[in-house]
Image (cartoon, rainbow, N blue to C red; front, side, top):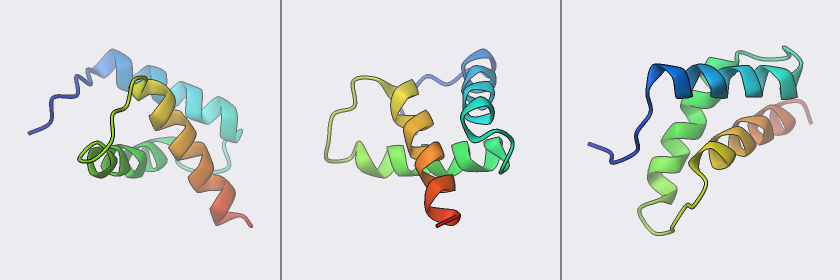
Length: 68
């Protein structure tokens, strides 16, 4: 299992942040789930200092690529 501590409060905060940045153009929880899976793969070879920022940026980037 992962050593990333993600509790309900943290996840809810991330969902709110992604919703605000995507203005409801996509399912924030789905985007975050995909971002979390990306984080797990990425951390296998790289250090991530700010997990929240990584998750939000990756989720928002996903919506940007989907609408290009």
